[in-house]
Length: 325
Length: 300
Image (tube, rainbow over all chains, first blue to last red; front, side, top):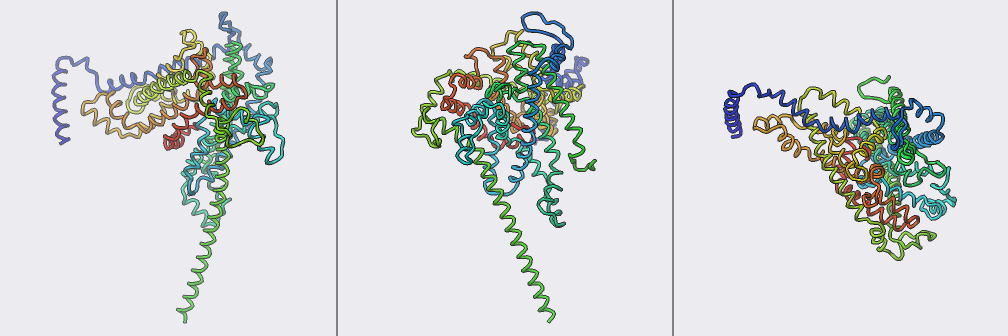
């Protein structure tokens, strides 16, 4: 039935086509050319979008980083002055780099470890495991201002939940967290661990991809749980951990909303993250050229760290089917 | 005689095996119950901030500072929610957020799907080069493009309008979504396209009538993550919107915090209201969320 319809249709369309082509053969494009034209047309939004919102602005900000511009007076070419000032004359720049790096240094490994640990526990057939997975993942759905406000209340010095619990359970007089120069940054790290569910889920997917025969074979050879963890699970999970590490570094270096809402960079610049420095320079001080230079430094810093991780990867990341270097 | 001794040996082996199995089962049971307890403890730790939030949002101001704290507020003050909604122009913020979220979401889904179709299904010169350039732009942090984009929109006179937050999404919806959808479209059999073409379907028709309906799960994932991203977005509105009547919920919440410092019952009520759509979205689309994270490696 369908075949016949197909035949009659194509026959009909061929007849039409012949009728047409006889009249104007040359303007009719080959199917190949038609496809190419449609390809370009349909892809046009992203090509334009890339030029307008990514590549164009990228070039513009590179040029701008060698200029001085306060939006009111015309921009002035200043050469590398912005970069010189950044490294030699800007105390806040170094503070921002220090705070952000320190934060990443704690948040990234802790996040990785907790994510993997929870995923390991969860990778078993337990009753209600689905509910657990939902609960653990829930906080990472709710990033943003509302979460920042919730944690401000939890970290409140006198009546915040955390200090109340510390006092009642351990008889420890808790610090004033977000109001303390020493404890504000650790508070931000603690808060970030609440959202460890995303990394956990990726780890869980990785764990479920490990063939069970490997564990069975190891068991026959007399491997205990520890040997199975270090000889099978961790090597096979290393690509996933590698991915989570890179992602974690990038997102830790770009923290903005939490810091802006919770502390505004204080007290005494103890949580003055790099994102805040860019924002303040550009949209409070209107130093557009200098802010562009700051943004470029962030980009290069992220790139350098990512490259470092990539370079280190042959030593610890194991890809199946490829011998370990 | 020998037959009996074989039986005895056999029995001993059975007994040993049974004992071994029992021990193994016991060990597995111990291991599983330990995991269970640790997981349950962690789940409680994660839920406590939520419960604390709900509890605070229903308290009177004076009982916020009781020691020891009340978990079940007495009296339960439902009015906090009404107050939180009326102390600031909440419904204006809600309307603004909905306009921005849904108009940009539509643009993102339609244009990303169209572009991904072109990359996955059509052959055209330059396609692969452009795709690689597109992927490499994923590496670029938005901070780098932030300032020139701001100046571009300023020159266009778009500051303090929703346009900077919506219009860019109509240009392909971002490299990441295009990549995600392209990968999905590659898994749809190409014979369907050929069959449709033989039946006289146009290129656009193939996209709209064949690929779009088949890609519903992937489009669903895109919509879920897109919704979450736009709803939570803070920096974009912070930079582009100045006047209070243009504010989104995220900005409104921040304003609320600055105006009603220490009135945590209101702040928590307002935060919960803002979180609610995200919670509902998560609840409805749980399965897709988990799948989406697993497929994309996006942490949400």
